[in-house]
Amino acid sequence: MDRIWAALIFFTRLPFWRLHEPPKECYQTVVEHWPLVGWLTGGIMAGTLWLSSLVFPYPVAVLLAIVMRMLVTGALHEDGLADFLDGFGGGGNNRQRILAIMKDSHIGTYGVIGLILYLLLLFSCLVSMTPKMAALAILAADPFAKMLTSQLVSMMPYARREEEAKAKVVYRKISVASGISLAVQGLLPIALFIWYTGVAWETMIFIPALVMYFLYLLIWRKIQGYTGDCCGAVCLLVELSVYLTLLAGTTLMARL
Image (cartoon, rainbow, N blue to C red; front, side, top):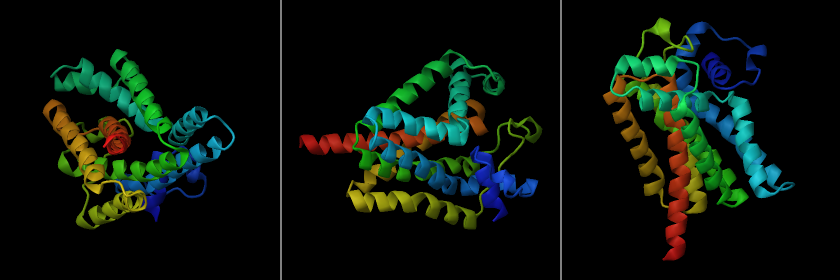
């Protein structure tokens, strides 16, 4: 239970630390419960969207839902996406320069433009769905994206020394038991979504997994290891690919 508390404290800005402070070593395992945190953050975002759509115009409800998740997470993953884009966009093929740029607290051109485009795409995807479908998609996509992204921890080493970590935490390698737990946390919501909506499970699972894999190849080629920024960026981009895949499938089916 301490490990779940650590994940909730690490990945959100909700005051869980006031209720219980787990041992420091538990923070090395937070990624193993990341999709479970996604049940909470996705639930808050989906609930905000659904309830807001009852009293506000739908685009306003979508914006409120996006803002609410950023408040809950402290824009942790958005910060990672901006740093990732700055580092990989401005660092060329120089590993040390990429890592240095990602660690810099200032945001650059690639980060600004990338965040704007990401938020525009996210907003456009959600506003293109009905409130019910968007809320269900969020509940499924958030944990699923976190589950897929957590595989980076097993697929490559940490790119920096532990004392250089921005969050002062290096995740431990995922064991077989933890991997099974991760699969349940991430696959259960999207399996229920696929069963309820009847969308093609092959594309909903395969395409986001393919996005994660190509991002893994890019990260490995550039810096031969992951960082927290890489995890945050991959999580958001994989989640976005779920929404894009869902919309593409819906649009194609409507035209056939």
